[in-house]
Image (cartoon, rainbow, N blue to C red; front, side, top):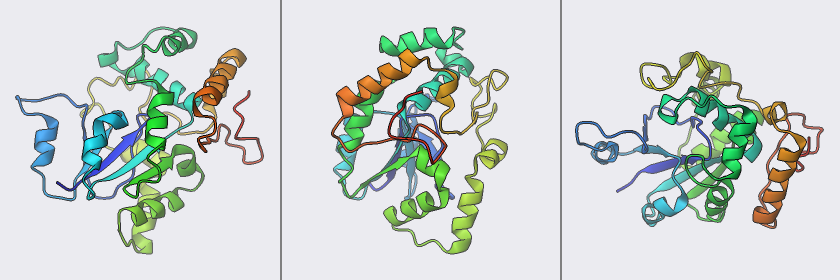
Length: 247
């Protein structure tokens, strides 16, 4: 079986032209699983998931399977998840404060697994020729370069017109206006609480994190991911010190 897997550490769309992404965590309808429907599709097929690497390990043993892993710095990721919890009826439309939500993170009571383990497991696969690591911050800074990088990884020779079309479509404001992420497809999402495509910025975490919370994330990152060669930008200002995530 030949297909591509798109995984992410956050609920964010990945730009792949013409393909419809099947979401593995979607509900089963009529006794037929989403993956059964997916398996019957003619290739190329694109699958989207937030599942950990260990679940996908066997699929990646197929050399025809490509995986693009989208990562984002842990602080902005957590803020994004906070708003996702607030708008999502399936998750109870969280009514608590940011500090109360952060406590759930500290207690590892949020959906999926610990961000640090999840990220580390995928990062260890970065030398795998069938795995491409893409960072959200790179997309914000230079979407065109990321599109070209993904095209090379997937073996696609895109002309300049196709590249510009994808880059234009992938601009955050255009995604907010035109993407099929709406109440018809996602009835559980209350767009009155917040938009699915909310800000798309680097550094919004500074509007939520206390200094103590920021320091705790820095400490956890240092303890669990230090020496891995993994770095994130935490600020939009290119002149700022992005390796450090201090307030």
